[in-house]
Image (tube, rainbow, N blue to C red):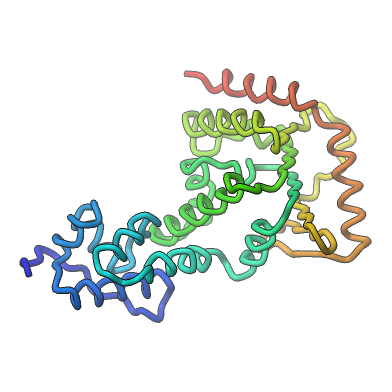
Amino acid sequence: MTTEHHVEPAPDPTSSTLAFFGSELRLRREAAGLSQTELARLVHCAPSLLSKIESAKRVPKEDMAELCDCALGTDGFFGRLWPVMIRNAYPAWFRPFVDLEQQAVAIRSFEMQFVPGLLQTEEYARAILAGGRPDSVKLEELVVARMHRQRVLSRDDPPRLWVILDETAIRRRIGGAAVMRAQLARLLEAAQIPRIVVQVVPFDVRNHPVLTGAFWTFSFDEGPDVVHMDSFYEGQLRAEPEVVAATHHAYDLLRALALSPEASADLIASAIKDLSP
């Protein structure tokens, strides 16, 4: 076994799922008689990155977890642990939202300030999440978790997604001009997908029906729709028939007042031009 140049201190495995992942990786690497340098070579990463993963200072990518299983002969242990680690990166109140998002056959979203998470670029998501001022490790956990959520749109049976944005969401320069240009380009790409509709409510709408905050509606093959409403501290899920009906009515009004998908795409393209150097 080769000499390690620098070994980060071991994390408390009970402190988080990320720390458990790192401590288990270290234990199983050492049991296999491999140095960090040797395992790093097998999983195609720098030894310094592997050291940070073992000490719960960096979040591993999913393919790296699978490579660790291959290198250490752990029978898929790290591959199975990875999605558990990602799910636990979310605040506890948000995990039911993610579960519903994965089960829904149709998703309707209205956002006042931001492009919704399912359509965010990584840098845009990082800029938004950094606003909450988490530590660097937690920030990276949250970014990886948000990107992981987007896989629901590329699976074999993706949900239908209807997104309505207030014009504020495409004008606010989250992360700076370059980040925002890339985000708006991603939004235009998504709008070309048949199962995704993107509309924008322009600034000049006088009687805006929903100025109180963002909301999402989830529809399923069986069972009633569920509504998620955002708030300052945390969102809430509601399934009472009167709440769902009121939300559907508000969404219908938003669709009527929003620009058509084609005109919305033109406005987004115009916003990209406004961000040009």
